[in-house]
Image 1 (cartoon, rainbow, N blue to C red):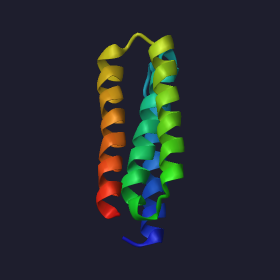
Image 2 (image 1 turned 90 degrees about the horizontal axis):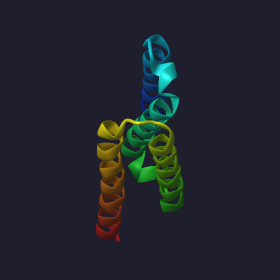
Image 3 (image 1 turned 30 degrees about the horizontal axis):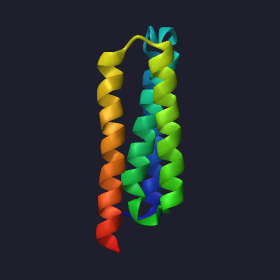
Image 4 (image 1 turned 120 degrees about the vertical axis):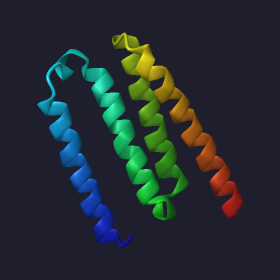
Length: 105
């Protein structure tokens, strides 16, 4: 996949996600959950599209920001049925990145 294809895909994904968030009724009642899930989805898409170009520092910064957003959503929202699996996926992404990068060295 070429760089322009990746950029185009990210723009389309952002537009689709924005349409879903702003077009769905009731998302204003759970803003932190919507923020945590959408940012996690966008960063996961970017991670898989740009894995070969990413540095470890960028990955850990975005991974930590995802963790902070999930923690804020846990604090303010009562949606543990969504947040617990999201936290497990968040930890699995860290573990898989660690093992993939170790195999690459």
